[in-house]
Length: 467
Image (cartoon, rainbow, N blue to C red; front, side, top):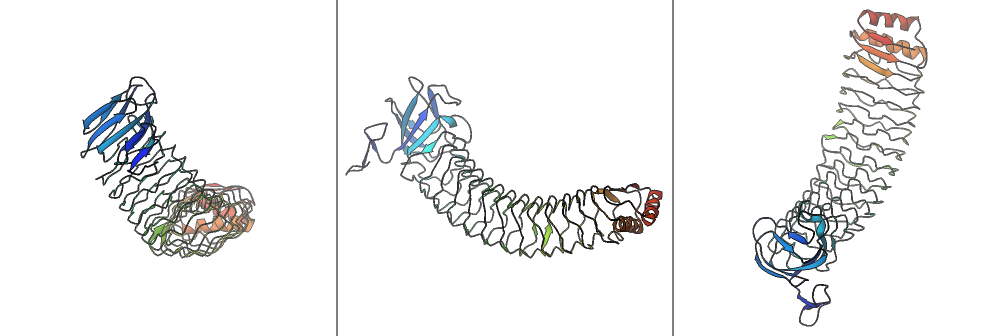
């Protein structure tokens, strides 16, 4: 409460304190590096010239850096700071757990351009202050509030100059909401809200200058929706929404400049559909939608510039079909559709540049057939069709031009017809490779045609296992 002449009334520490003071409370016997009846004010760099008053009646003037205050007994005390105090600097160390509450920001932050690591690790701190301090010139908020688990809300501080928000509110697991801060100058939002698991919604903040969103909302497991933020300048959204397992839908964000989609929506297990995003730059999609187990369909995204789709749809267990994507520049199909247990059919995508198919369709239990794909450049078929329990129809001549001799576990636990296993063995024999390994189990045994090809391969140094 403020009276007519600007005096704050009703603060725990005094009947009256000036409105310019920084006021906060501490609990001295919480774990820390100072004694159980002490509290250390931790600072960083220059620019400090401050006086201290405490609720037990102490006055300590002329401080220019760290200061340890000794109280008569262990307990909870209020501390008032006046003068120049640009920044706390706890950096996950010292008496971080003793800081309980920022009651009034007051003079805090005047002249500061850097609040990096200020309250990092202050696990018991809340902010009951209704004023906003002096953050208006701060450009660097890296890890400023990381690990402040007790925070449930934030005041509408002035972050209009901020460019680096790396991990700023990461691991604030108590946050129930987030204010509409001015982040219009922000360029880096890596891990900014990662692990803030109690957030159920997110405001439409201004991210028009941001280029890096990697891990920004990773494991925000309470988010059920997400706004259409401005990602026009974004180049990196790797792991941005990884583990947001309550998201049921996702907006059509601008991804025209993004080159890194690695694990972007990994474990978004409640997503049932996905928008037709644009991919205009050479990009990598490793594990981008891995474990999106509720996706029932996938759009015809232009992936003509994509170079890596390893594990991209792994364990998308509700997909029953897959679109004819342009994968003409992709070089890796490691585990790409592994665990797509309800996939019933598969299109003749362009795999002419792919160099490895390790575990590509592993455990696609309901696939009964596959089209003829160009796999000539592959160096490994280890486990590629393993566990495809109903796979009976496999195209002949699939391996005629293949350079690899690595087929270990390729067709284990399948249901290949006699014609299919014959065609596979003949095709591998035709390729002319030597000293390789091949394994098949389940389905039919080879006919005389297949046995001849098998014996030819064995004579070339191959180890061959068939049903």
